[in-house]
Image 1 (tube, one colour):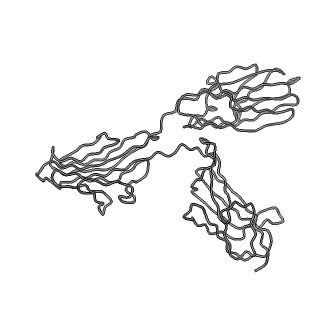
Image 2 (cartoon, rainbow, N blue to C red; image 1 turned 90 degrees about the vertical axis):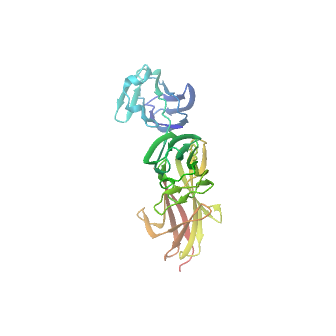
Image 3 (tube, rainbow, N blue to C red; image 1 turned 45 degrees about the horizontal axis):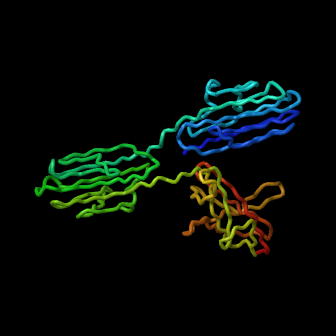
Length: 373
């Protein structure tokens, strides 16, 4: 899934109006309008599969005279493809006006009081995301009889015996589940060398799959694999036996978070303000939610940073910090914001800041302290 992000400005001019329709794959997605003497800034977002698509901007100018109306597309980004970085020849143009790049973006200006003009851009097919897999391995066995194997989704991609070692790297599709399996199988009754296989430094999608030892792995065979002190895993067994380990990669859900919000809670209920007897010690809970463009709904998200502090709104129009809050992660998934301070009665604000990915959101909760302490 790939996100198309569009931002634009409509300037209606001194008379008449300027209307905009945006079509995605020939289907009208939104309509907008700026009226006489006004300027309209807005945005349009849509999530699409990785096939080729098109986006068309159709603008209708309706006025008694030419009045200085124009439209500027200030942002048009499709995944890693920047439409505004392309030449004018990229656009399919059907217009009675002029079109050109300016500092703000792609500007379209009507040249007659009543006119329709449009520009269409092709959104290229997106390459599917790849999941990198790498690990180090070694085998010490009777050559041609006892084997160390690497298997992914039932297909053997590594089979070695004797005394060998190496490093492996490859990629698979990112949006599908994959099962990675390592096995040591002993057929021969003769023992040679160390009679085992070892694997370590298993990195899948940037995650170390041995960071927590064998947690998350399924172990099987006649003899279970063993975690070594150096962090590698040893697979060893006796005649006509096997030892194996496997783990499945689950692709992340299709989510594109375009906004986040902070909800303050008390006793599990959303609050817009909170009253306390005094500002000695009290707490407020908070949950973080993100707007998922794929489902069109608010969903719980895990922020990378959560900070809180108590503030007073002073006469100069600025928020003055009173104290920092202590932030605790609750086992039920919310954040507990603990306040400890010494301040007179009055109105205060609990400022909560949360960051998810590249999005940072700030919310202030009004706090009314009734008495002095």
